[in-house]
Image (cartoon, rainbow, N blue to C red):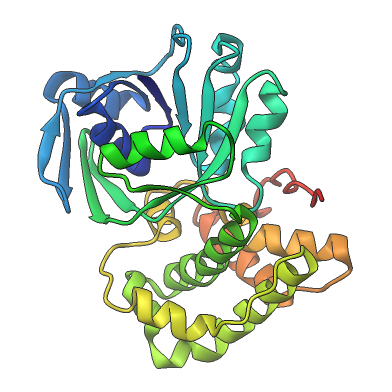
Length: 311
């Protein structure tokens, strides 16, 4: 199978490298990362230690019939990354959006229409770009794919490459579960400046509870009910992790975060339902303040609102 990875950052590189062992893969990424891969291969360090000879480019010229296209960009970058790709897509291609956020796959679906199958995926892998061409894959997990007649074959492709593909019959619940994790871990660890495991600090329990209560209320309004103590679950799963969450990574590199598609999306969805989410709204504002250049006046440029719920 021919596979294109749009957005070869940390997660895109991990997926592209592992898939390249069995398939022809083309990574589409930023110039420095692409140049390093072209010259020295793609190096994974962490859970996997290996160098992969992977094709990489900054500009995609074509997409072969029957290709699998993984979209692994930050949600903020989806529209810009897909704009030059969408006209190249054959009708029998399959797009798999491996991204964070609430209903983030709708950005791609709206761009390509109904001509190309577009599915959501959720990854439990984690990583970071150490230097151009070198990626740390510090968290191994699995990949969930939403139901579709092609989903089982896609999951098998992922599993054969060490990415543990699974078809879930309730992607909406899984989306909300990961959004809740991200709404707690990403902004709080960014604000306190800790690795992911720092989220288990006892002093953070009241704040975590407030964030979770709002997220669970919004999930319920959106048709997904949870009967689980997310504070206990988050502490159990993440307490020992030493990797840095994506929001803190982005802030440390002077990049925009995905906060508008996490806590900001929860607050915006709440506004649509007439449900106030002051804690998620406040965390969004705090992260946006940290995004601003030091000494900059006037705050941040506005982000487009997240998609409204569709039932």
